[in-house]
Amino acid sequence: MVRLAALLVLLPALALAQGTPPTAATPGSGRPDPSAARRAELDRLFEALKQAPDTSGGQMVEARIRAVWAQQVSPAAALLLRRGMRNMQGNEAGEALEDFDAALVLEPGAADLWIMRARALGRLGDRAAAARDIQEALRLEPRHFGALLALSEMQDEAGDAAGALRSLDAALAIHPRLPGGQERRRDLVRKAEGDAL
Image (cartoon, rainbow, N blue to C red; front, side, top):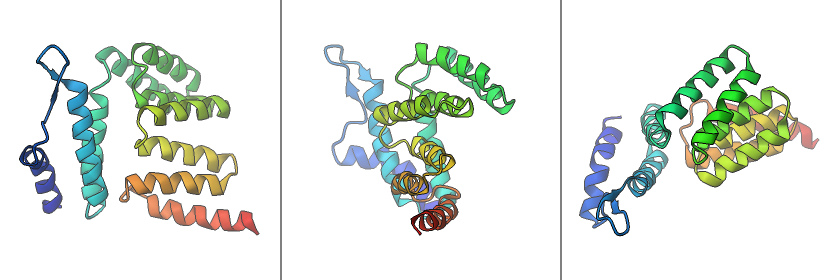
């Protein structure tokens, strides 16, 4: 864990030593481009996620990745997201869907919002629309292990254990220390093997 924390602290310094600029300038302005800086940080963090020595190390890197993703959401969209999540916890998927729809109007480029709307749509029984939202989230961020995990859960609920296993394996390739990932994988392997018989 100490080794991972040191790695996370040293990542920006290593990038500088290798000649990688920490931020790119916005064309014509000379000012740093925050989205380019976020992409560069995410690239480093995803590499660190693959190298995480244990689950707690993986969770530390995952938390930082999620924090970087959250930076792209405006305060108004974040408020709607939190309200939608409360509605989901209160089994009010219809109300949550309205919140996520409104948040997506404000921030259509935020993959997390598409995933949360997919979860609400799934609870309301609209699996096709939920799958489209997951697809959009993965288009925006192909390394979004949360989207792949949500897709795996939806496929499992639909009775597609083999598809759920493929999606989970894709998530584990990105986040090998995904909490509970190996246990879930064993369950899906058993289901997929049973379906194949």
